[in-house]
Length: 580
View: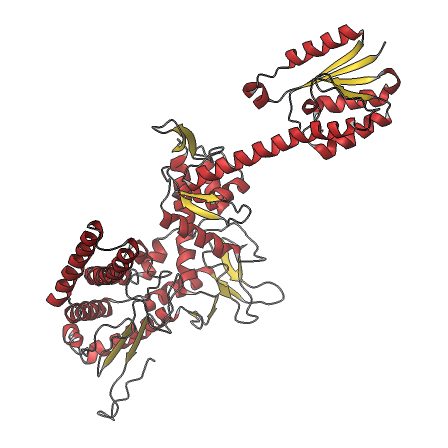
């Protein structure tokens, strides 16, 4: 009498799709053993995929066979695909059982291993499940990629979304109750003054459950602005397509967050410490003796505590917190754009924009040409419909006229946008006022943000004065003009409106506008987003700057340049200093 072990296996999808069941397999095996008078030692039941042999019940079966190999004659299956769907691993496992003296056979696909030709049949029986498994896998991948390319996200919904159904009963992402917290996370990070840890701690208290690593993934996931990321596959590169689901954040906000994250990512070997509201200038001040960053601490005196910015041993540089703060606030007053300069700039910009608008105003010939091209497009369409033009000729003619029409329409759009540029400049200039008040009234994060914008690098403090060697060049120019206007007001009391008329009629080019004679001011359309943050909300796009102008997220040294001077040739006795 043979001693046999029965092994039955089914995976969830097979049971649902093909009607396999553990009880059905077991009943067939027991009937087979009963007819042949086999003794069943044990039965192992598995609900696991057959891609590998790392299955809980199969591991128990193998352990038992190794410990009781003399008591087991054969391992019985219903079909060979119940054993495995991996040909290479199947042969290896069959070799292990053969080494134990235990045969393996399938009752519906029996093989006599003593016949060499039967080994070919075994190869077929083992290969068929693997081929079927790979084909199924490819079909699933193809189906998912097709859905992704159509903008339909499939898979587990990311945090902030739930899986719903559209009108055609197909799956689609819908914002969940956590979506407002995801939006708040992007808004806080985009400000550039909070770390990911601070934002995550704040949102955890509101109900957002996420780990640090998962939160970083959320901030990089294009799904939140409506983009579906498709991985590279074979010869297809990775792409991002527009999704059909409702976005949680705007593309503009998402891009701002990426800029902030990338900027912080580039900072290597930075020691992060908790910011103390008592020391807003910590990390910005440099020691005048050794040029190292000053730290800060509080010392206990006889009757009270004293706070200092100080260097580390052996350097003895030390400054009272109050002295440094007062000197810094006084310095901020000196670089604030005062009212006379602000009004002058606004008048100049407004007048030059009006002149440019008049010189670039589109005349009747432009609109006549637009109508002529539009009529030609309609005419060739009629010729094509009547059969007087073939498809190739129609396509070529349509493209030629459509390109001309698009260029003409772009000119109209550019002229319309110029009308709103003044408000954009005005809004940006307003942010260069009241630096001292912004600093005094701001919280610790806003104070440090403002300091970092003014000083791209660290700065020194000596003799109760702030050293301005590394100040933003834009603000250094403003400081020069502020002093120049202060001196000039007492002696000349100039009329700002009259000064504005001294602008020469050279047109408001992207780089230069100047005052002829006493004052020249150079302006460009290149905005300084680091300082003029109020301009970031504008969708206006001015003409492209000429070569040499620097644009982007950092300040633009050439954006604003002042030069107040007297004409020494016409007035040799005037010793008015230049602020170039």
